Length: 141
Image (cartoon, rainbow, N blue to C red; front, top):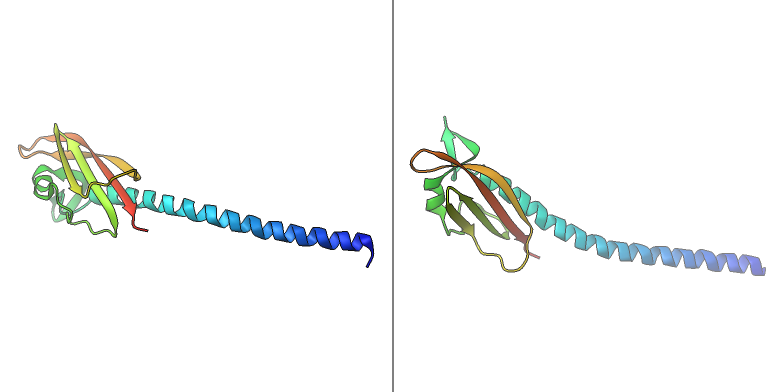
């Protein structure tokens, strides 16, 4: 075997090893990114689902009006963990508006992705006030 051929084979083997090592490192970093984005996606989905939840929204002709929450329903589910929302995650939903705040779910300790959406709240006296729905969720590992 000539020295040039031997050096070429060594370079090819080293390039292959570095390529495999690089793929392993990238794979471990990708797994962490997917877990983070999965929790963020859960928070986004929870916010949109809660804003359109039939048990919390006003109904007209049997259909729910997404984004128009009823104070009476928010009062009913205040502090509840089973507020017609079933998730395999830790979650909390906070709705604030009209000088009041309602919280459903479990308080999440530490940091967790959250998503806020503008909503309207129909108070018990019939007036409609602007509000904010904030959902926090963290997927179980």
